[in-house]
Amino acid sequence: LRDAFMEQVDECKLRCIRVYSAWLEHGDYPHLLAYADLGICMHASSSGLDLPMKVVDMLACGTPVCALQYPCIEELVTQGETGWLFQTASELADCIVQAVGAPPARLRRMGKT
Image (cartoon, rainbow, N blue to C red; front, side, top):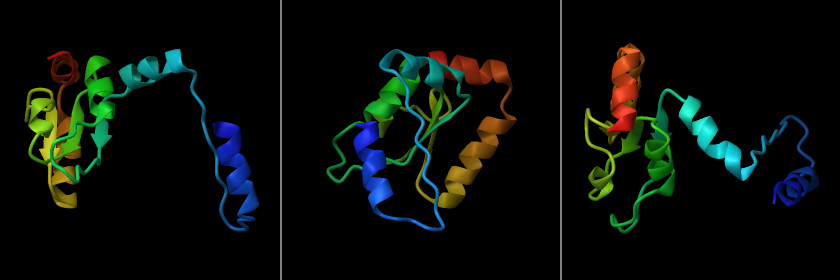
């Protein structure tokens, strides 16, 4: 998939833009997520009923999440326990500030809840 994507990028003949694509083997993905201090999910559900697998992945790896709020996301992300929810850019910024200011032990606990 990566090679096909990069071929399409090359065909665009972009002069002022460079595209780099990191590629992870399947088994490396959980390790990458586990090293993150915080995951951010901008997924917006059109139906309000689907749950983003990236949030499931992040939480399964012990990474707390800032997620865009919509009706069923609270089934995964509990405000202040497994992460933070936001609706606006300002609220996302507040979530990030809270995460950055949180003691590392609290972030680890949040990711393991």
